[in-house]
Structure formats: structure tokens, C-alpha cells
Image (cartoon, rainbow, N blue to C red):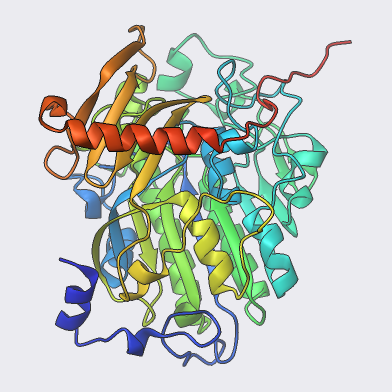
Length: 473
């Protein structure tokens, strides 16, 4: 159903959804929201699969809070990330730009590591930094993975505060026998630091309680900043392996430990949404729930599921880069399922504009304003998506069709295959990418090739930040 048809069915009009000063939305009616700029909360999981939530079709993982969030808000079924692994995906979300433009992708090292000397350059303007001139309080909670040295931390990129781990929870490994360490994980197997602003406050981080503490930190921030506009970026470091759940959730899911982890994250979402309701902030707060990339399939039952999508983390098939996404803003956006295309980079532009600002004009910003699709005034402006692996374009989607120029699985030992002509799938008919229709659509292939040419001709690559390493003395 088109968004305008959905609005009509709900008895709403585009005019009823206009937001004074923000372009779109309903007039504010909450006691804390009247006359104020909207608040923003982005909840970003790590390695969550497209099929891992109840509202996206999982048969045994219970996600009642996310299910309610989807019922009250919008479930986007064609929502993408900027890369299929952690570091470049996070850079894309926070800067609104493809990682190739900031140097946050590499063909040598796919993500940042504890021995990395690089990180998100100071020349980049994060959502947090863009919101500061508009009076926003900003906080980052959870996994950062955009550089662990002081100059790259959240507090150096527009965030007033930070509480979390600086890179993936499987790094800094110090003990455990082979892969068994992941099947039967213990906190002491990894010496991952937990940071408060720029200081390490716990090492190793107690990963069994970390999801609970992230959610509590988020609630604490919301309550502390309820009288001013705020932006909260909550980036869980799970369900990335190794998996950990607190005592309250350990052993409670029919899906095993992986299900325990997802259900604890869901519980935390419930705490955050309840806090927004209780504090009278719900109708003035735009909340997003999504993930950085698809499931890490080599870890079997400790990895998630991409549902009907092909493959998972690390590759440019749909399972690697199409994510389960829920957008929630009570009384401002009409509930429904949105089949339009969107991307995490679009959150950058959308949020900044809703706050009354404009994306920086001195650089190419890949994020588009999703307001028309959000508020029912028209379709999403996004109709094209570039699928990068490292610094190379492996695939491009335009409209319903996706062309693969290069294919390779995420982590298997298969060889990289170059396709000429490219393999072509109609994702509206074939979201599992099974049936090559290239011979039937030479015009589509020519059009997509032209998109690649336009894109690459205007592309300026920045210095590779991921390949830099700390020099050993």
C-alpha cells in the first residue's frame, strides 16, 4: 500500500501531519514538547539479522516491545546500511556519507582494531556535531568502533558524553580455547575496556550485564535532559559474538542464548519507550531501531538469521546490508508498513532537517530527507543504493532491480567472481536473489551502469583510515 493510501485509510491527511519549524509532523501537545525542537533516539544493534525480530517474522524470539513499536510506528522493509561490516557502516550512519568519502573503509582491513592508529577524521561532521548549534544535548552509549584514540572518540565528535566500549566485544582476546571460547563465552576471555567519556572505568568490561547497563544509561540520560532537546545514540555491541545475557534473561528464550540476547535488547527498548511516555516526551521524540549489518553466519546458532534474504554480514547480498528497521514517533507519523527504500545515511539528513538545520553544503552528503515517506506527503526520495565492499562497488540497486558486478560471500573461502554482464535480480519479485533476469532487461543494466559512471566520476576518495596501525616501539 502506498503511504498516501495508508493515510487515507487511517483518516489522516498530509496537512494534518505538518510540523511548524520542522517541515512536517503534528502540532505538539505534550507538556514537555510544546514549542520545543524534537528529540532523537537512534538504537543501533550489532549483527542483527533481517529475520531476528518477531515483527519481522522470527517464530520463536519474543520481542513484544519492538513489536509494539512497529505497530505504533513504521516498519520499513527496504532499509539499508552503508556497508556490511561494523566500522564503515557506523561511519555512514553518523556522517550521512558513504564510507569511501571519509576514508572509513579499506581493502586491507575491513574494520578498526585495538592496534589501529586511524579513525573518523575531525573533518567529518557527525549528527551530534551538526545538532550542537541548535541547542541539543548529545550522548553516545555503547559500541563506538570509529577510533579508540582520544582524537576519534565520541567526545571529540560532538557528543557531550560517552559510556561504552570503543570497538567490537570479541577484540582484546586473552583466553579461551579456540572457537569454543565463542560457544561457551566468559567475560574474562576478552580484555575489552569499558569507557566513561575518555577514561577506562572497567577492564575487562562485564559483558554479562552490559546490555542492561546500556539501557539504564540511556534512561538516565533521557530523564536528565528531558527539559532540553536531545540526541541519544545507543549502539548495542550485541548480538555480535561472543554472546552474553544477564541473569534475568539467560536461559529464558526458546531460541537459546542468541534469543536471550535479543529479548534483553527488546526489554531495554521497552524501558526507553516507557520512559519517554512517562516523562511526557513520546510525542516529541523520533526513535529509530535498526542494525549495522546482517547476521554473522559462520557462528551458526550464535549468529542470527537474514530471514528470506540471501547471505549475511560481510557481503553485498541483501542479507548483509538490508536491515530490520522501525521508526516511531507517536501522533507524528502514521503507523504502517513502508516498502519505500531508505538507508541509515538518510537518517543523518532527516534528523538535521527536523531539528531546523541543513546538512553541510561544503561536501557531498549521500543521505536524503525521508520526511515525505515518514509523514505521508510523498514517496521516499531514495531510489538508488550503492553496495560497497571495502573501496569497491560490488552491486547497485535502482528501483526494483539490483545488479551485481562482483560477488563473494561474507566469510567463506569462495573466490571473488566478476560478472560481465552483471547478474540482475528483481528484488520486488525475488528478494532472495535466486533468479538472474539480466538477459530480459539490457536497458536496466545500461541505466545502472550509467549511475555507476556518474557516481565514480564525482567521487573523491579520502585517505584509508583503517589500514593505519600504531607503531610498536
